Amino acid sequence: MTRDARGAAALPSTALPLDAAASREVDTATFGLGCFWGPDARLGVRPGVVRTRVGYAGGSTPSPTYRDLGDHTEVVQVDFDPTETSYRDLLDWFVRAHNPRANSPIRQYDNVVLWHDVGQREAVEDVIAEQETRHGHVNTRAEPLDAFTVAEDYHQKYRLRSAPDLFDALAARYDDAAVRESTVAARLNGFVAGYGSAALLADEGAAYGLPDELLATLRERVA
Image (tube, rainbow, N blue to C red):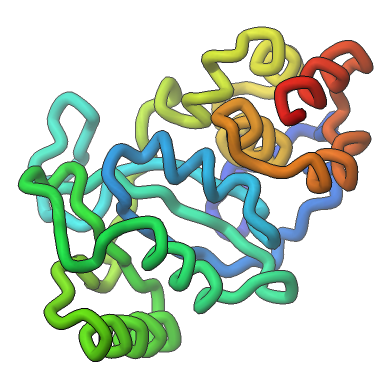
């Protein structure tokens, strides 16, 4: 598996239509919201989101794994097209998705936002200041991203993996790294988990490259 200039796994030459058309000019955001399976699915169907991946960040333990996480936190990393959505839009979603005044007693499941650059840091500081003005002290962690370790393959697009008819249709064309970096997989992961709209499926569904019978099954799920 080759990688593009950003370091993401490159898709094969037989990439599905939506993946082949997906922008490679993206910004990246990293959030922790408890177990990473849920936010991975929810973010995968948000407007402007191009790719998602789950992993471990926010700690100092070298080479974290799911079985040896050390002081890291489960996080989801999102590549998004800044011409379609903004980092601030994603931050606002993040704030609505949890209670900023509470946090997990287990660091693995902390609520955390990890900024990538000065612009993101300033946006995070603004949002935290707004939340503190409205609600008092905020317990959500906010830190620079020092490193991100990709989680094991079986955690990537976890909800989609529970739907073997759909997952196998991707796995027939993609290896695990390409599934992880696929916009199609991000969308299907969200739909299988119960997120995503019929309008999104109607707009994009033909570009998922699914057999007609599987696309019909997906429409039934969403309906």
